[in-house]
Length: 275
Image 1 (cartoon, rainbow, N blue to C red):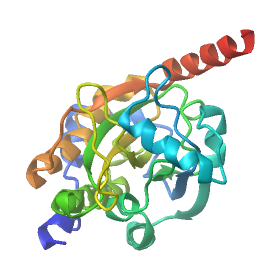
Image 2 (cartoon, rainbow, N blue to C red):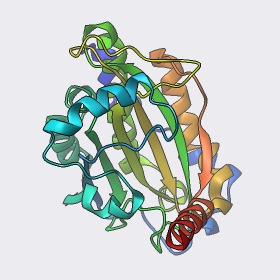
Image 3 (cartoon, one colour):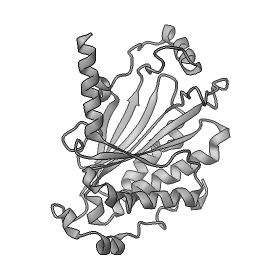
């Protein structure tokens, strides 16, 4: 990997002075200092995706080939989210966490292990907050979400290295943020899966050694009221790195409030129970 791509030690967040001038320090009154630890979570979903409901696409055709030979034929649902998550370990310093994360959870490593019936990811969250949007700690917050696209083989090798650099820099920045920013950021969640495509952009799965994938790069925050604060500081720095690394992005960050997502889940469950 190019040295400039992993120079997280050089590209530290330089926000403290600007933040203290722009945003009042009492925004973070309950937290006098940055959080003492960050917890690493593993995401591993081996359930079958529920993609097409009417017409089978190229992605579902590949999925259906696996059903007769798979041991697990359960369909992926949000109600099984807890079974996809595993709490690994907590860390109070960036170097130790990065050593563990880069051994197993770099985007380039996750990309090589995803398949049509396997999604992989890693979450790094403050304290013991779980990466679940309906949890008490997250319900009032929201998620800045960015989609990353590539392939698992040589075709996107350079691009995936840039994803690694983005991941490493973001993890390092979690520990280096000023207190008025840090106390509102709950964590980073990166999840990778085979790209199912759509009608406008159908995927080809002929080369199993170079499958198209998509990844969700997410920053979770504590409250939607702090959306602007995080957007103009932490998210702005991430955007700067994306630009500096020339990472190809199809769509910009979008923000989703967690309470709206939770309501949709409740309505969906209620609808199914009435059938």
